[in-house]
Amino acid sequence: MGPSPTPILILALLLLGAMVNGQPRGRILGGYEAKPHLRPYMASLQLDGQHICGGFLIAEQWVLSAAHCTEETDGKVFQVLLGAHSLTEPEPHKRLYRVRAQIPHPGSNIHNNKDDLLLLQLEEKAELNAHVQVLPFQREDRDVAADTVCEVAGWGTISHSGHRPDKLYQVERPVISRDVCNHRTRHDRTITEKMMCTDSRRKDTCKGDSGGPLVCNGVAEGVVTAGSRVCGNYKKPAIYTRIAPYVAWIDSVMASAAGEGDTR
Image (cartoon, rainbow, N blue to C red; front, side, top):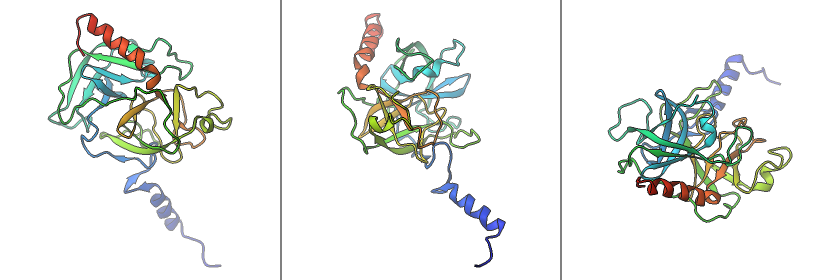
């Protein structure tokens, strides 16, 4: 047998293994910085200038996110940042919008991931341009086939130390079947027909990504749930609230606001 590797060599190998495409592996394991402004629907939900959750524009005056994002807001109302790639750097089309109404789904609660959706009505219509656009969402209530590769993006945690990026990150993940996700060694029959899952082995969403869209073939199929979950653990697949089962609720909320004199 030859000599054992030196500690320096071992350290170098560990550091190399912690890098993917030159980027440090983090809680969005294998994720990478998105190309600027190619996801013009992305929203950052903010309190006191700090990013709390993701979201996305579904109509000129409406953003969809996750209800659990309101749990630790102490009654404060979010502001919504649109048109951003960097959260802090000056960008010509970036704008912070005040929120007129913050409407969690009436079935949502702090104890589980049920009905984890939140609608935010902006004070005014968003200024649509190449950097700010509406994302179509799935209206047909049918499951996405297992192994379909979908995309998710956010400004959430990217390192085990809790570091969050200033710029938008993205990752591609394959959908896994509800049966697999509900296995007793995974989510043990807690995933309902209104939820879906993606594989989380080494690549995953994490804290701060909640509320962002799971985009499959250019359409938002799900919303990243903010429920408690270990990030990057293949035994705890990422959970999303499917949008299609809630189309009637979304439409009714927006129509009700329009009936009160507001437009979409």
